[in-house]
Image 1 (cartoon, rainbow, N blue to C red):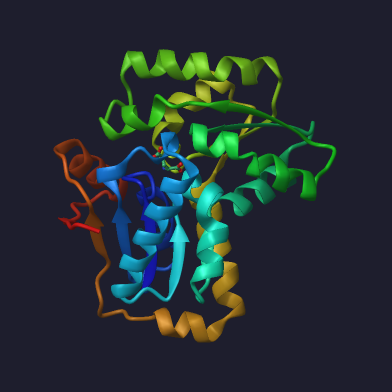
Image 2: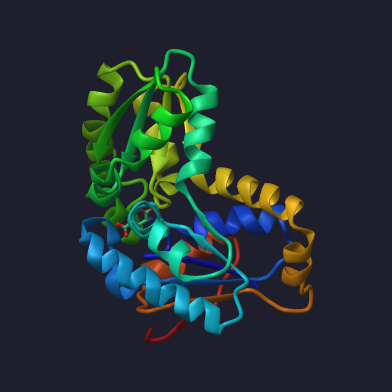
Length: 262
Ligand code: DGL
């Protein structure tokens, strides 16, 4: 099993991208809705939640962990890798690599939660790959609650998105990293407001492609994950009706979300 976790529904965009690439690989998804949003939590709490989430996924038989959350990836991935002897994939490096590859003018924008933006991890990784690039960041703390409420097409959401993106537009970025796994759900609102010529980096797609590279290099791991007769499972630490319907619209089918205490 692949173990995937996020603070809520955002990581389902990653799960969906993974199942599209690997229909025969079952996964266990955990959305820590009881502690969502992660983006406004302290580093200590994010490490603690990420540790608990990983322990839970391990008890369910995960052989590889995908941290499908930028806030957790940017603060806790190092600690998790030190503590657990299994492959751990984060959402940040695949997106940074893609942005570095696509940007022509070297002006890259990043939107994310406060935790992600303040961690500085995107800027550090980008400098290592393309030192001449500049990263322009914007924390967007209101977007995760709007997504979790299902307010994807509301006028208020469009106004807030426009306000958040204006400084990045003014910087004439040519590439925008959606540095939060909830944001692909807002891409129809984001694209016209940042400009159609700006490349949009959706980390869910990049993570799935990165997983493909990892599994191509490690056939033993790939074989250990194969279980065509086993179905993917979805767990959450709290459950509300908008979340149920968002899950349905992400996967295009109804998914059973099981509430558990982690
Ligand atoms: N979707 C997550 C991220 O990528 C978490 C957002 C949040 O809970 O604040 O950062």
